[in-house]
Length: 352
Image (cartoon, rainbow, N blue to C red):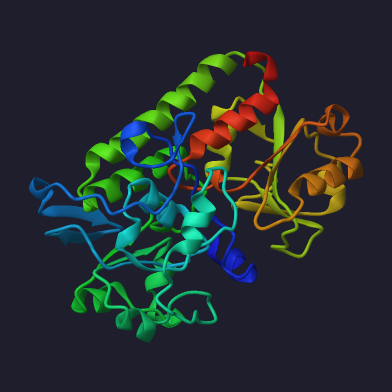
């Protein structure tokens, strides 16, 4: 879930994450109207003829002569990586997972993530696996949401140190550049495909991507030509800055999801970074046609949405009671189509 790292730290490193998997019956996951659930299935056997595999990731060549069997998933304020591995049936290869979201649009996913081993790791002040603990886990593959997770200054094992210890490494698509302002659903596909290649399950990865694309294309056909309402995407009960409203999404994958759903971001021009940190007056002066509340362990996200609509009765969203509550499908990961579908049905109910 593509949240800026400083904001993630301020929120105990647990804001993001990637997401609801889509596949067909061959995926080996719980079926849910065309969308795969995320249970920790037995690791799928990798195709023997799939190796060796060479992959260039964030400027570094990574070579695999077999599927990784001792996988460590760093926190990184994300669930994209662990959700992707579960969607691909690789849960039993994980020896330590630090990612968690507590809820999901995919039945069983949150529970499956909770059941994964942590390796007994005590996180450091950055809410992730410190260098010594990482080496002690004896991983052969380590996933990090951003390059931050391999930065020695932050107390983490570097990619070079892990290579010396026999581990390959991977930084998610959102983490290679200086920011994630241009992150799109295509980056979710990249993550799924890269993991499919690394674990020798490329066919399975392509089925997930193909199913997700079909679902999104179906929505696009239904909402084609419709007026694009202005949508606020906000994280419920989150504080990321100094103003009254500091958790408003302005750029990144959120905007691509809105566009695919037939909407637009009401606050895209309010910030040059991923999130806008705005005063109540600025928010009140913005026309909002609909509301998307992204919830992390909020016991009553719908209540938060209703409270917000009551606070700004001048909004079209308030007058029409237009809101939807989502969680991990709004982040990088294998299930952005779920967010697209739910938002589109809220914005354009007559099209469905």
